[in-house]
Image (cartoon, rainbow, N blue to C red; front, side, top):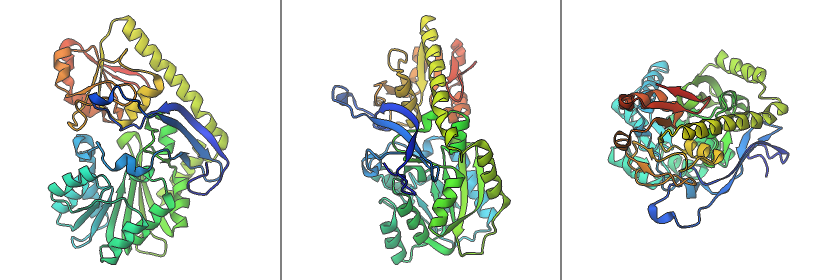
Length: 409
């Protein structure tokens, strides 16, 4: 395996999570007696450019062509998006005739807010089922994977972006250079590119967020590595923000390297210095992460074993990709967890990959009255506690396992 950015062949193991199914490969009842595909979930770091990465076992077309994640199901995310759109328009004084294009636009929720402000919008979304939902919501959407070919096709039709947005897509890209070159082609000369992604490497390591590692995420980035990636493709990061959303995200503001429209802020150098002090440019630092994760795994086992010894009934809230990584790595299945619930009706009446835990509507919790409600999407903890506060009627408690085990009355 070679580094997907710099081509270095001397990669070192960052974290080996064993064999795991694809995190969003939910099962129907009829699938349960069939053989299930498991793949190595081992991440590596490059000693040259410090990109943390997985090998590609399934091409993106097999993962994303029909997808079950709809961004509009999370109130926390929706509030985050609404605030982002308003602040971006104000911060850069963007006029209404500017073309806004979003890569991996999902069900069009972000673009819907730009449309409210009367901007012309266009989404590019690889999942056919989700692209149809966006179209039905009035968001024009191109159902294609993004890269140089799609960028050239749109550019040749005069559909270049004044504002180009790529939220939570960069980690999902196996061919980084091809993708970033596509961004450069599609971005107008004085255009603004905004890239945001979760599983920011410094947060992932600092808070032991190993559940953010799954096969859909081919890469895990530091700002140090991203500066090299964008610079190689004649794009310049001129500002950066760290956000608490999704457990630690980074938002990058980017322009063409030869464009003087935007002034580089001190934030970039400050973040780079913080990363260096944290140890992200030291190979030995990366090798210590596995020990931290194994320690957390042991604590999780202790919690489940002691809870079952006390005859506690445990159910989960959510069926996120991160939850499937955690449950499969820790070997936690139906012997500990009765079922999980999810607000996304596209996941209800299916089963989690690997563990085969059934997924129901949140209403089921009222009839079974569990002692513990384990929140798998811990980044949405506050939203879920508010939504499910009725479990307190029977003295039910909420549980979060990461970054540390927390039992909440």
